[in-house]
Image 1 (cartoon, each protein chain N blue to C red):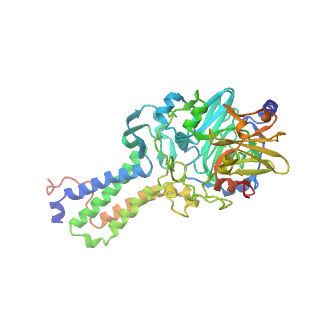
Image 2: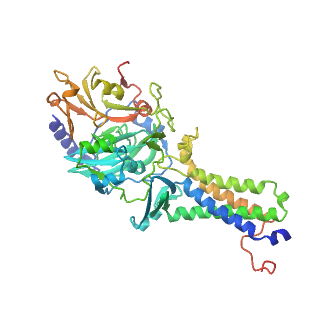
Image 3: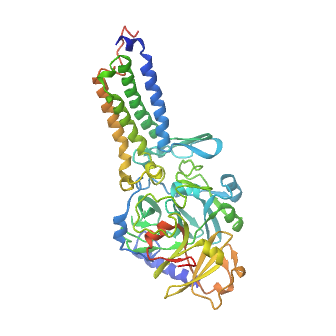
Length: 188
Length: 341
């Protein structure tokens, strides 16, 4: 525990980095972050009504209000998609924070790969739920045999959410520190 | 003849409008290998919900000159020439929307495109609008009409579920070609702009590329959804030109047509004349046979298609390009005009 308290910033740093990386991956998986075939520098805002942000283009996927293109990188600005990505990324980051805290505190043997497995299994489904235009990404990249269940793939996102929450609670029970602590003289 | 057909259509439309509040110009379905219910039973969700792929209902237009900033010469477009107006619908926009509810002159039309089957078809829509249902059959877009909520697979152009099940839509000719070819034929064409009412990365095709061919569009790549019938005479996504009538379906090998210039076909109940349009890279089909089949060099192609005195009394039949697997999945009894079969 002394070790964990001596290096409190490492788990937080790892958790934060994981959150950021996951948001990028998630936006790429749902096609809100993509590449263009021609470089340009463009910002499009205000061309569609604000209420469009609430329109679903898929289950748990929402319309964008704007677009930023920097070179060949294009980011669609969908407030709800960003919020969902941030929620998932935040939960994954919290899991990584918990795992890193336990490991740096010498408690790794108390969670025999369970924490890593929980975080990984929770993070993947949402990335696979993303869809392109009229077919889920998994189908477009040629994963065979799942066309018949294409309509069920979007439900992988709430599955991700559930697994990440359960996994974080499990880590907490293993002794991982809470994300938010009351003021402690040791950390002051 | 065309005028008479058009008048008959208008009268039928008027009668239909009295019977149906949604006033879709309908007629008997052209050709279905199975009862309508069978297609519905074989359909499945493609992923997005109804209207999750949003149709363009208030299209905005560029001049051809402005279109050149957006399109490369070899970019695919879907062209329509109707009522004296030429319009180009970029594939790179329609891949994200699949349906444009448009009005050209006095005709309300829907221009539709299914990326998974490589098919572009146009329909008269009356006072109605079409939307994307989110369901697919044989990988083909199933549209729905917002008036009666009938479901229409694009290639079949026939209702398979809902009040108009078993009835057929009225097609208009659309042309699947490239921007430079269309612009050469129609210098005054207008181009659908990217001001669609939605925000998308129109500089990316999520399925692959037509220039050069890659991803889903590569001819020998596999279709991703189940189909009702399979045949391996051609690579799955090889492009053929197909047309169908109440008596049968015909797939034209475009290489064969290109070599011959003109083809004829007799299905026992009618004769058909098929002309190659080398400038647009497409085909034009007519029912009936002139006394003398015109030589391909003697046919002039104007804005509305082929012009030749021998074509005057023939009835145009609307065909369209399609990926082979999709054409065969819907029309397993299709005749193939390849010079060998």
